[in-house]
Every structure is written in structure tokens, then in C-alpha cells.
Length: 136
Image (cartoon, rainbow, N blue to C red; front, side):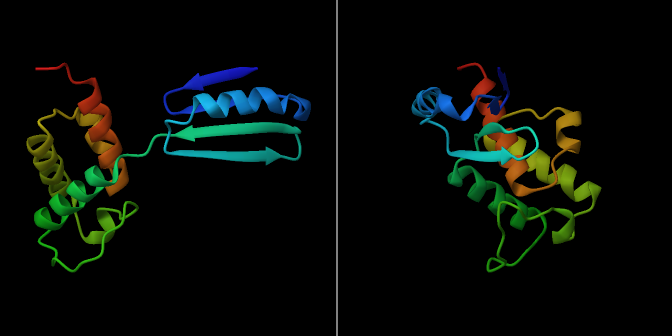
């Protein structure tokens, strides 16, 4: 049994079907990360593939966050940095999203904007929107 959604692929297979798993992995070589998990109770193998934003996008988002929140240049930010932990309130977050829209020439839906809490989430959303944007 296999299922595919947005950024993850999962399937159940007996351990004797490792050849099929290898075939899936060869096809998944363009993804940035692949992780496995084995669940004792169900004796199934879970394959998860995620597409993280490019490091350049994460860096651009970090730079914009620093600028919008008036953080010093030596403030260390990671992809997991939460806007709220950096002192951002809801207005700051709106201003960050507006700056990202301008920088990347995208439009972020309000519902999506409300779900952005970290630099990584912002970078992932940006790449998704840029990829979906029709060519000019």
C-alpha cells in the first residue's frame, strides 16, 4: 500500500520487499532529505521524503527578519528560529510577510501568512509560491 501527499510518501511493505524500497529511493534522489522510521507495533516501514527550502532562500528570509525586527547583524538565526522568540508581535509578522512578498514578488494568502511561525516555514512557503507562479 502506498500513499503520496504534498511532501511525503509513505507505504507499508514486508521486509522482504527491500528491492522495491531501493527502487523508490533511486527515484527520490532529487529530494533534499529522506528519513525512515520503523514502528514496532505495526511491523511496517515508513518512508518520509521532505523538500526543504534552499539555503539561499532561508538566508534571504533571515536577512529580512533581522531587518524588520531591527536585530543586530551578529544575531544568530536558524531555520527553526521562531518569530515570537525573536520578539515579533502580530504586526511585526505582517510586516515580515509584506517584505517577503515584495522581495520575492509573490502574494501570500492571509491564511498561509497566519501559519508562518518560523524562518523555515516562511522559506518553504516562498519556494512553493515561486514554483507555482506562472512564468512572466
